Image (cartoon, rainbow, N blue to C red):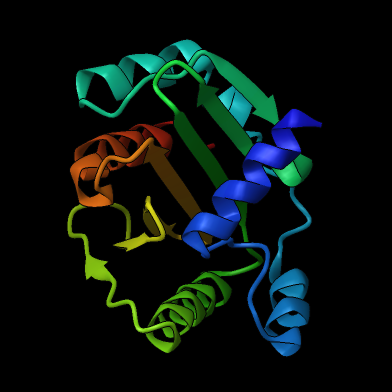
Length: 176
């Protein structure tokens, strides 16, 4: 239950869940675009010890506990450093569906007055955005679309970008 609370709070902070677009039409089209393949289990993909090492090596706080969530999402937490992290990746039915999901994510940020920063060299397309105390990274590689959201206490979100990018590289290297 604590894992769901952490995941929910991170999704609310960053506002960029790959599973919850704001429009009802976006929700139904995204759900229809998810592949029949088993969901990516982020907790298996990124064990807490690996995540903690990446965070610490990139001045991104720490991770002591890991919480599996619905659909393969995984949240990580360290109450000592007030670190909250969410990793969520989904395999959509096609590259085109993943491209459309990324376009929808960009649109939602623009509608909120947040300008995403393009990130090169990470997957087929990626962008970072700061929202409400959290640094977020949206990534697409082939038909996979995902997100990494990190907050560490009162730290400025942009200071967490190196850790988020390092996590993104590791997730992409481990995707099936």
